[in-house]
Image (cartoon, rainbow, N blue to C red; front, top):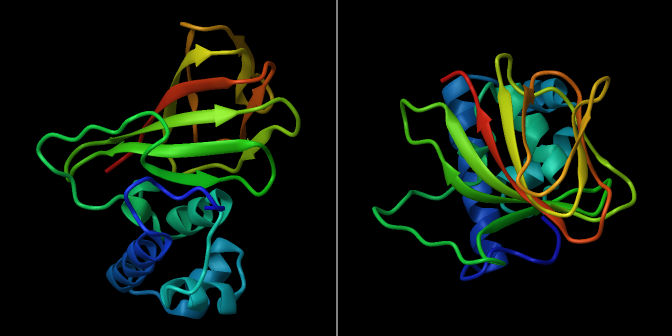
Amino acid sequence: MGSGQGAGRAPSDVVGLIAAALRRERARAGVSLTELARRAGIAKSTLSQLEAGAGNPSVETLWALAVALGVPFSRLVDPPAHRVEVIRAGEGLIVYSEQSAYTATMLSSGPPGTRRDIYRLSSEPGTPRLAQPHMAGTVEHLVLSAGRVLAGPVDNPVELAPGDYVRYPGDVPHVFRALEPGTFGVMVSEHVS
């Protein structure tokens, strides 16, 4: 999650939220700490720290844990929703990539019974964001707002300009590569409930 936490929330609040969600979802899934760490491909000590509220997970770690738990990413990072919610530019729960100049800001998670989460994605040219497959059946919808990007399945990405839309499977390796400075867009992740 890096140094730029969501506005209005102290870093310890965000880490505490993630810690509680990990404990809750691991208990719901009925898996041990050791088994979840193995499934997610992370060290048991890392998972233990995260569940204790002592870690600072990257977007890659959180996605791996979500996939291993069989839950949407949002279930690990999104606080309870309010009836009317406004998230200003630069606000919200922001998670950072370890691999590239890429951030994902959670704008809205699907309430129980729905199948979507909404993110604002930002990236700069350089190392692309390579994402591992998400839960089976996941589909991502991307509308580019500014800049240019190469996005979609690793083996068949498409170039988008502002206003362009692409839909692609999120349950295969996929890429988000900024081709211009200041590239950002809105992504809807649709998943099986």
